[in-house]
Image 1 (spheres, one colour):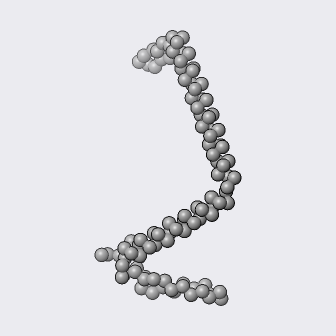
Image 2 (tube, one colour):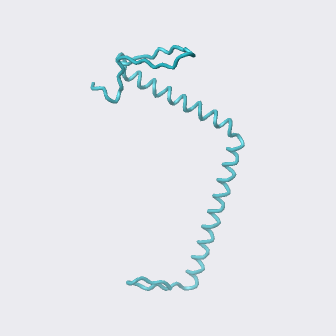
Length: 105
């Protein structure tokens, strides 16, 4: 039996048995889900290096596609970088840059 200030509840044996059965079923379900997750993560872990390479490629592709979309959106107002490889210097020179978030159309 359980009660609150307003009501008292009475549980008969049938309800107690059903509640116990439901709790056991929930525990079994939770354990089965943990087991499935564990096996799934093990399969991913077996091919960790391949997944890592794929994720890096997708990230690079996502970045390039985003830059391309912004560049197309800006049209003639955008600037294109000129990359000069010089192993003796690490310099970034910028002139008349425009950021799309602060531009007024």
